[in-house]
Amino acid sequence: MKILAVCGMGLGSALILRMQAEKALRELGLEADLEVADIGTARAVAPSADIILTTEELAQQLGQVKPKVVTISNFIDLPEMVAKLKAAIG
Image: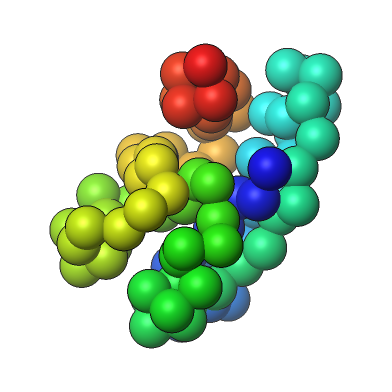
């Protein structure tokens, strides 16, 4: 499974999302390839991802993409990340 953490510049927020996703996946007992990207790159590489983690605003900018888009409200809220990833993975 490939998860793409997306923010505007592909730096700060995306790195926080990736770190939280790593923790959430450990808690769920799952493994995934986690990458970070800016919004422009995310559109180009989206077809190769299974899940995209981002904010509501950036999800709207992504538009229609193949992967499931999971929006995170509070990047440091681990329970939110766990719940939303669990729901997305099924």
